[in-house]
Image 1: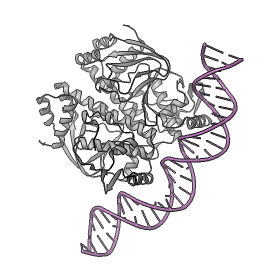
Image 2 (image 1 turned 90 degrees about the horizontal axis):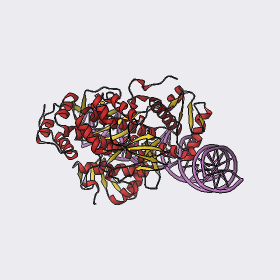
Image 3 (image 1 turned 45 degrees about the horizontal axis):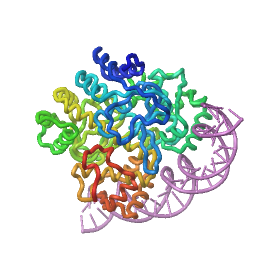
Image 4 (image 1 turned 120 degrees about the vertical axis):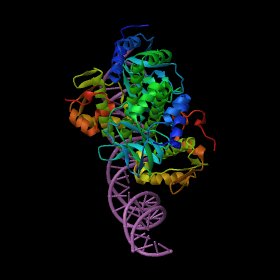
Length: 248
Length: 248
DNA sequence: CGTGTTATTGACCAACATCAAACTTAGTGG
DNA sequence: CCACTAAGTTTGATGTTGGTCAATAACACG
């Protein structure tokens, strides 16, 4: 429907970094049919139990995957920026085992599975890149398991800020040491396995210690090196290539 | 090197269930070169930081993936039975972001990446099955994130027992409601993000309430239905096909 | 300006960790 | 077959982290 969606271009570039794509492959990707939807904060792009026939590319905004557990509480599983496809796995896994929600107003493009599959058959490099993208997803999940299982609140939060910063910087969404994190403290709590109150206190501690600064939802990292050490953060698991680490 | 390794056969069967394989594809898989290694408990099959040129198939025993965090503590990320390949992802992710260790004496077969890649080129169904296997891995990680983030010690443990039981039953490793779980309470603690002492107490609670029975490392599930409810367990995420749920 | 959401604070509580010791079990060598 | 040992399990006492509840303050938006 549309050409020249910059986030689609970013997605193609990121695939190309994972597995070099021929020019025709890139062209074919940029001609995918996009069903574009504008989303409000809180809108579920996909729901647990669905059997989707499309995957979604985030065009604008900020998206998370989550599960609801017994007591009705929510656990956030991952965050996704513009230019990412959070549910590529639904190509192969019929039924969604979690939901995907917008954390901020934005736009997403649904990509038909049929076309994606056709592209993979035609261009094996695309299949490789898709697979590799889902593997990196898995690597991030593993790091989150370690984060939730073995780190204190302060460490977890520091780690999350490090991951957010590195990923946003890689996507060109940072402004120096600052970046927009469109999350309420309650959502942060759902990602970190903490209560909202404790998130508030932990955040204050990070600020008190001069590690970060918050101006509304805009966060600035004041002492990257110490933040990284506290959060026990090592960007290897993001598999971003050379730019894995960071100089303040 | 060897023919007729039953665990290899089981692995091929499980791939075949994920994506139907032609007879020649199955034959080709069964002719893979196997570098068989006998492992002691505690042995690292693969180490974080490695750039492996092989993936490993568990032939016998019980294996886990883990990460070491800042304080030197270990977080277990997943368990793997005989007939599973815990590090298929290393086909595409150059550097290991975690380690894999034997939790019990056993045997593993290392499969050369080169041969696996050749098979994927020759038989696209194999590539599909491999990919899908790694996606299921990811689904299990997601459930573990929810488990660690939002459930109490008792719920987590119940959930882990449910997952272990269902997976083992699916692999034909159960004896009625019983199964061998070759884990110390300390390892259980490393999987559940708890202390060993608290694992002990929680285990006692499960026993006191008539949910499970432990005879050494042999566990018997006494009240599946209640255990499942307590652990908030729904086998969908295991993507095992029809036999997802269970009748006591 | 209201009005609803989000952030912050305080008081109190529960879950789980830590430490240290005793007890049990499974191996091992004599 | 027994004694010895090391690993794993169990227990008790105590400490800490983080949760819960409830109220207030700060924003954001129409």
